[in-house]
Length: 153
Length: 153
DNA sequence: TTAATTGCAAATGTTTTGCATTGGA
DNA sequence: TCCAATGCAAAACATTTGCAATTAA
Image (cartoon, rainbow over all chains, first blue to last red; front, side, top):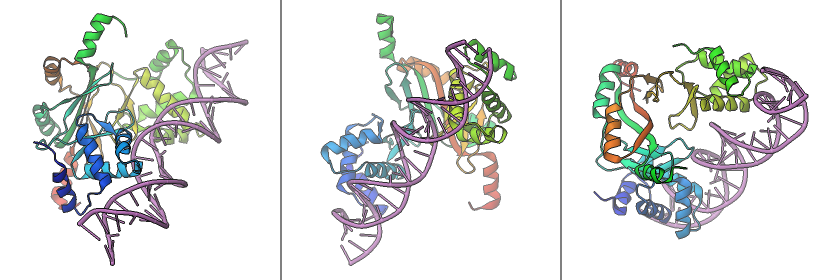
């Protein structure tokens, strides 16, 4: 289930958009950093190394466009910046995220653990669920181990 | 399980802070708008009606302070603004929210539906869960009814 | 009295937009 | 060709901060 540039190119074209070199480099960077939850600024800096003339606004516009096309998922961990990653094909839902409060690492949970919860929401609250966002805050395995050896922060 | 001004006053004092009239009016507005998920701007406009000299920065500072003291819960629905509401006393977890994509209404779900999911996260991923955020996007009961009668948007 | 708090304005940081220019289809 | 797309700079946002003046305790 690989995401390919050609695949995206086709999606852009069929929606009436062009595949410019700027968009191609942006996609390349995103492919090279899958599951990294890059911010627009992050993407911009990396794209700039390969295509120094690019403007930040173009990166924003590209990320917005790809999110609209459901190619990317725009997410928000409450730190004031939007982050982007490929939307997993075949999953109708957003993945869950585990955010470590010690090291800041964000880990993906690909299983959909919420089907039972959604059933409750639909039955008890009459709410038709289309999507969800679930984030856990806590301490990741590595930081737990560090704490045990370390004692301190 | 009522939240009282005097209660908050005591919490402020014991932490070495003062209860200024600005803070008192801000608290009053928040009490009058429980479960409304007001933004700082929302709070500011309402406080201003009663205390026109107040500055926006003061509202931000008050909301931040009350969040630090765990009196308020600062939340984020991905629309670029932080929203605030009283943290339910006795609940260790954030509530869940149902956001209607039609009318924008935000409904609270007070049940904790995630204990099973958290167990899985702890066992399968070795992640020590401290807190979570869960938001559902979809269509609320009222908008579903409207759609049925209306046909259109 | 005096440290905390305020209002204001300026600064910050992220994201968006206007516009003349460029370039992919 | 010609409209979509770009780069730039300015604007638009939410939020924070510096500072002199004020005030609750």
